[in-house]
Length: 77
Image (tube, rainbow, N blue to C red; front, side, top):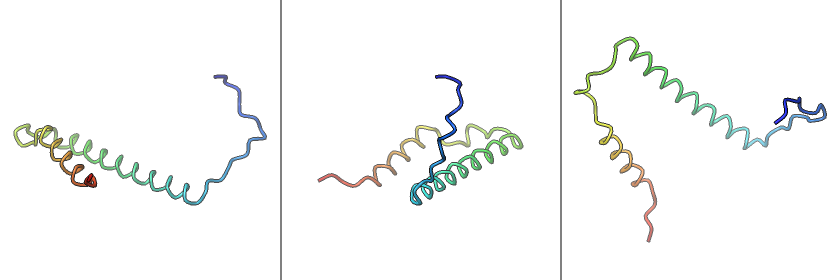
């Protein structure tokens, strides 16, 4: 790819209202996820890592999540 600037005659195109709203919703969800991750990292920085004996093994978390996804999926006849 070249490092040439875009031609000057390229005007910005406005998004359709539904597309713009969808993009705003995605941005809000991404921002929320980033805020949650930042809060976890700040907690770890303040309090250190939790005791492994007090944590739920990732295999249990995975199975719980997969069961929740399977329950949301419509049944096939």
